[in-house]
Amino acid sequence: MNKLRLKPTLLASCLMAFLPLSALADKTLHAVDNQHNRHIESTQLLNKTVINHADRLVAYTQKGIALESVDGKTMSLLKGNFGSVDHRQVKQGLLLASVDLDRQQAMVALFDDTSQDWVASTYLPQPDFKIESVCLYQDETQNGFLFLVGEQGQGEQWLVADASSPIALPQLIRHISTPPESEYCQVDDALSRFYINEESVGIWAYDAHPEADLSRYPVALVEPFGQLKDSAAGMTIVPGGLLVLDAESSSLSVYVEHQEQWQLETTFPLKQLIEPEAISARMDGEKLDIIIKHDMGTASYTLTWPHKKTSSPEAIPLVTPLKQTDPVPSLGDAADDPAIWVNQRDPEQSLILGTDKQGGLGVYDLDGKTQSFLAVGRLNNVDVRHGFHFNGKQVDLAIASNRDNNSLHVFAIDPDSRKVSEIGEVATHAQDIYGLCMYKNKQGDIYTIVNDKDGRFFQYLMQDKHGNIAGELVRQFKVATQPEGCVADDKHDRLFIGEENRAVWTLDARADEPTVMTQVMPVAEHLKEDIEGISLYQTQQQNFLVISSQGNNSYVILDALPPFAYRGVFRIGFNTAAGIDGVSETDGLDVTSINLGQSWQQGMLVVQDGRNRMPRANQNFKYVPWSAIADQLGLTDISK
Image (cartoon, rainbow, N blue to C red; front, top):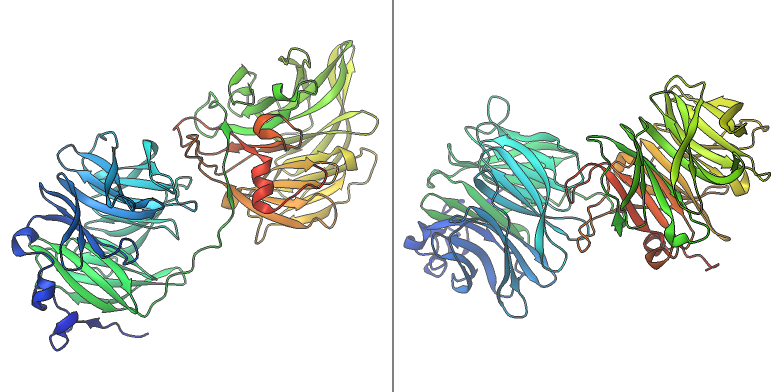
């Protein structure tokens, strides 16, 4: 491994290899004089392409945040008394985040490229903890999120900007349990990685994405568990590595990432600095420019840097939801599976049925508003079919798997009134009922296919027996491990089933046909376990299978006819304008190609959202226009 060399800056090439700014030529000394140095709260270097001639941001006690040039001249000043600073580029200019020390509130502002001045300052509500630091994060679509870090294990994440500028009303996304003794943080946008210090323990990394699990792993630890001498203070992200300050031993440790493992490459003493606490760095050719804040001011260095940026995961295309339902009544992991009931007389009056697996069935309109909730027990999956003769009347059927009774819970949907009502339960042979889907053959017979967690499937012919709903077991089959999602292609008499950790399979849906299964797609590069919801998007020309790939929060699209060609993958991100969060850990989904009016002319996708972040509430369901998916993946329908 190549050893790093610290290079002296500018005219100090014949001096020692690691020198503070004050030891350099007079021209560089003018960046910050001695008096101002003692009043610096924080500083951050800017990439040289951000703003012409701008070099850094500096927060001065009781003065404000200065945008300074290379020679230390103030180009613009945002007046106030600010602490920690961070920045990102947006389309309109430079996005700034800081802490107003007088108000104890986080603030975001924009340095506008056109006016060349600070505009659009927005304050976040005051949290119930003292803010020690702030750090910004931009997701795949350049939405801006702000982390607030408190010293006593408290933190928050807020949506504060879109790709252009700060939003008028920042939205709280989630509370975060952070380590105690935390004062510094940084985010690697490309890897969605949030670093935070715990002074006496070390540096931790979290997933920064707002839809991610709250979990962490150590990057650099203090002795005896790691190689930091006494403490972990500020850190800065550099290509392929991390620079970490040890304030108590006055040293700088250089960590590099190799095959997802962090290694200490070298440590430099900073004995001439008094408690170095905060650090910022930027690439300049093949070297790093570094600025360190310590008790008496700042010091600057350069460092030869041969390492390259850690490669980012391949980006998955994003679409955004247009609507979301009201939250389900139950707390925790409750919402599970939706089904779209198309009103054949007036498609714009269609309904979404969604299960609450702790309490019942929700009924929503196309704006996501609750029309009714049937508190009938722990319903897991639900599906619908039109045209069932029951008790002398034609109704549409909705059937759900009831985990309280291991039964098929049957509902009638009145096509005229749109009212959803219970009509009974059908006992099943399942011992731990789970997934469910429905199938209607060419003769008009309606079947319900339900599975058990042990891999068994049971197919029931739905019947009206003297005004009572009934089901006759007509076929059964089995997969090796736990299944859940399934969908029937009525047009082609084909059934698709998902074996959660293995593959999607297909077989003939007809009750009198063999149950020979063909693999459609295994868990591999595009499809990650768990395989969850499965549905079909069908027009005269198109037959697509849509699958929830829960393991990487994405959705895979295949041709629903052999050879089941892969057509693409997408994720569902934030719709900042509509105030709707993205989607993660989807269980069930449903899709239709029917023109439902307005934004749904090519149909819609409805998905369960495992984390309802904006506003923070119980789980719910998100609506996505199919047109957005088709545009993103190039799925043009020549029949339209």
